[in-house]
Length: 153
Image (cartoon, rainbow, N blue to C red; front, side, top):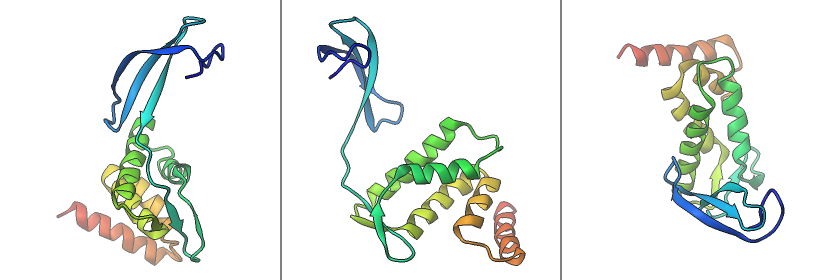
């Protein structure tokens, strides 16, 4: 592997262990030329996934779109970046465990909402309001009522 510091290809692995998520391998490497150390991660290659949009157009799966939506929903909430990344990892694992080549965007949205609901109710409502395209206050209030009813059970 090429050293990110000097660009030489003479590097060696000095330590390997499972990463925190246990779905990848963390490797510490050292360059034989400049002796600097760096970390790489190895993940299992997944099948290419296509997302079917509402208008039936298809586009390649893009993790950053889920991240952006979740980050917006969690803005100014007491949720750490690590929690957000863990949630997106869970969503992604759920999607890929479906073992489908094509997944409708509404299925992805429902998975995200399910995960957000257990993380933070406000973030969930924010995401749902955009995802479900609430047209009026009544629709918004109905969603809030569902959350409140669920909390009192």
